Image (cartoon, rainbow, N blue to C red; front, side):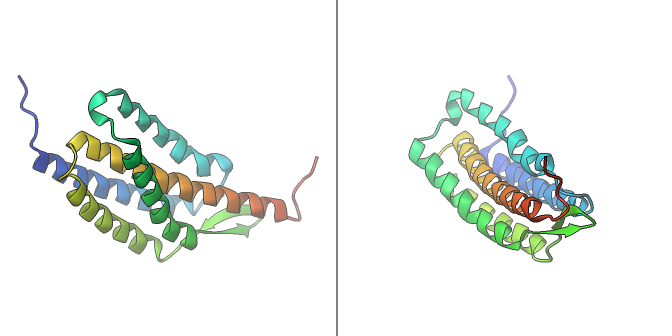
Length: 166
């Protein structure tokens, strides 16, 4: 019978995993800034992430609705610095996400807050339930941020004088 890792090992693994994800997000954002924004590029990350809700098919990941609501609301709060520092600009008739010097600092700050919160929460609920809470938090953050980007993108698209109507 396989030996399950201890909760300490799972905590370390999840922290390292989140750090890797943060690095990937940073690199993807740096690369994405070089290409024009599109509706697909803005909305696909939360759509792709939504498949993670399949985790709730496993009964051990179930959490009270109040936990999910609080996690989602905290995710919305976490998205606010990202929303405030994400700007779009029109260059050569295309909309681009303008790189922000604050983005890596915000990402690092959110990582630190996430580690502290994770350490606190895991003392009260199981490891799988903690994963559920933090998935919902991350989804709330990413979804809200990307929705705000989408609204900003659409606003710029409507203001473009070269827009072809038809």
